[in-house]
Length: 484
Ligand code: NAD
Image (cartoon, rainbow, N blue to C red; front, side):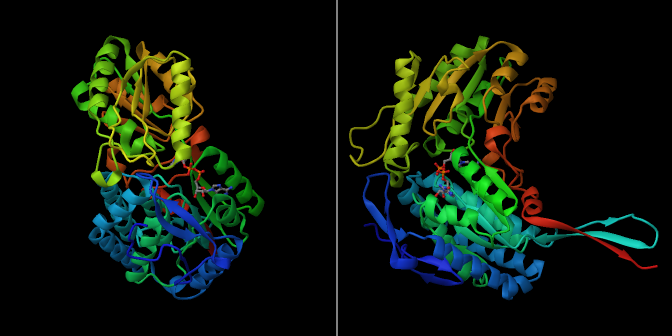
């Protein structure tokens, strides 16, 4: 087992680290080599119940009494500690997620930035006064929902915790966090950082465990007043149905099949790093991965050739070696991706490039060769379904109308990128793309903490990041006072 500086088999409830009910545990594996990293708590309904009670007690106690400015200060202290521990957090993420060190460090810096941003914003969310009938003063207040439930996936634990728990705490909610069973070490480290920064007990509770146990119990709990779910479409629907039974709001951040659209007038040198990186970052296990590259026909062969060159130069290896591409999260995820590669082969999709897997890779690791497929028909399953691995398809198009038809022609709508020098086209495309975020002449904007994020269609609903998240994690109350 890897040496960790804390006991990973405990959960955080009401400020105390403790074993799960019945002392149940789950094995946590290192995807770079398949070895056992730790035993983690296997939380269940009783643990979730205790966590919700602890959160309610925090709201009735010290945490509920904190002013907005005090909440902001605690969050900012947490941000400072995250910055100080960024290298340790990156190492944990490398061990747990298989994320290359540099990418893990970028996630830690993003987490720190969320805490700075939401810490700074905590006392700047204002209500309004409303000109109403004579003899009244009418105003609005933004109040916390109460206990918020946060169910997060394994691919970007730090960033997703930052954007959802950070915003929820800023607005004065008390949180119950259910990290993914495949990767929860940085979530546990985050709990320790929160305590060290002085977050009152019960304001943040962490219950690791299986989705169908701890996750389902949290999404169904009648004491939870708001749910934030990030993960697959299938589970998102279950969580939304559970939220509906308790009539509570839910934010769903689901999957994507995001396009980057390259017009013939694009600055190709500027675009190229974004075209490939947004497909292979975190092994392609990114909700906003640019898994479809749409290229206007005159530039098609050039783009494919230059992307292929980059693919052939990619370094693949264990996460602690800081390669370009690490392993996938699990043998199951590798099987899914290999299934898609077999489908590509069986249906005659042309292999434009495939990075070589070094012979020295550890046998127990979950490695898949990054693969570029071109040309692909827009209707092909690999151009329609989320693969969640380092696989990109390149699709040719002629003109704006066809680009839009292809870009909008999947069940998803999360992010899109447009590369063109034509100012009018930049606006036309941005306005007509059906998705939650559009980037013009860039992609991803380095995490974009300040930029509201979320999807349409099967990519989900509700917005996190930026100020928008603060509105989502609060309930608007209207007060009308009749005074004469
Ligand atoms: P998943 O839906 O299987 O798991 C996500 C979380 O839900 C985990 O914590 C899991 O334990 C929990 N869960 C599983 N079953 C549950 C249930 N019945 N009730 C309640 N909770 C349950 O997703 P995954 O495979 O871990 O993550 C990959 C998916 O997440 C991809 O589709 C990806 O696009 C999406 N994702 C989206 C975003 C975004 O911001 N839009 C970000 C990251 C990942």
